[in-house]
Image 1 (cartoon, rainbow, N blue to C red):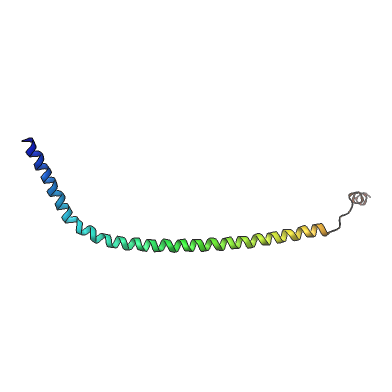
Image 2 (image 1 turned 90 degrees about the vertical axis):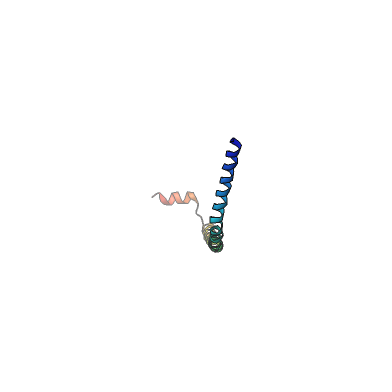
Amino acid sequence: MRFIIRVGTWALAAVGIKALYDRYAPKAKELRRPASAVLDTAKHSSRDVVEHAKAAGSEILADARQRSAEVRDVAADAVDEVTSTPTTDSASRTKEAKP
């Protein structure tokens, strides 16, 4: 008797699973198409964003290199200017400063 109840329970479960599959399997196939279209659009958009970010990074890097070269040139000019001006003796400066 116990065995018949268990087999009956398993049979009813199998019938229920088959009914759910028959009801929802076609809908799942229909829903896969829009989902794949959304995924394709998302992939395309993300690739565009990556390309844009790479281009922006390259521009920033080029600008930073140009600015650092300008700063280096200004610093070299300042060093040249300081080294080319005549320096006076510190002892003569103190004598001139005292009246």
